[in-house]
Image (cartoon, rainbow, N blue to C red; front, side):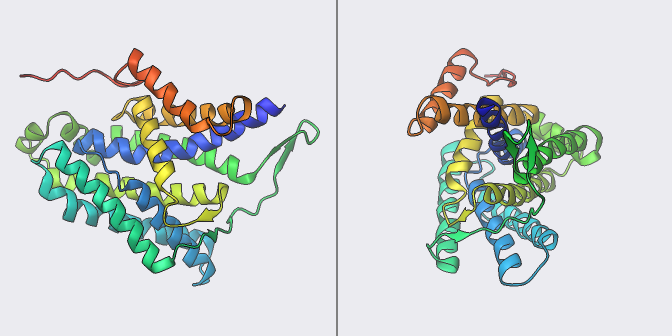
Length: 293
């Protein structure tokens, strides 16, 4: 029963990683850039929800919608100011800019909200689910996190495959130059990609801080790094890969800490990633891309 409890917790943690990883994988898959400031957008979203609920007296759903709106605008602003001028730049220039934007967001949050951790109040008040005579207790945060991951995954897959904007995203991902020749507005498509990824970051901030309720300016840093690892693990650029990589990473982390070593939990995660990439460099669901020279 302990193993089953750890497995459920691993799936819950992995679902958070998966939702965060979707932001990384969408931006990379379509814009071909790594947005390392994504983890800090999660932190901003969590702070907006916290302030909305604690200081402004907003109902939890309204606070979440406000955070999604703020993060969407923030993500599009970051793309316009920091990344759009670097469309033709080298990958190193984009990477350095992304790291600089990450530090900018962290230090701005430090100035606004201070360094002291804040206790994030969970908006989920439903009683825990007791199974097998009370031997297995599942918190409402766990169930909602797993359900949210499945719903977001399905909705995003349908959006990409069925809508006009989703098809435009696939075209830009395949060949940006050809997409422009076909009349697709590449700049708008990339902006929408950042907007969707940033809105998901606000939801991830809610789920992350509901499960681990200590909020501070560095809240999104380590989950962001692990979620990026999950995106690479599953195959960066693949939406199903982000979900699979996130869930597997969460399970590996929880089981590693439970049965091997609490201190080595993170090291085990990255060791598994290295092994997988040695065997399959494109990730579990990634496809090899041939480049013409």
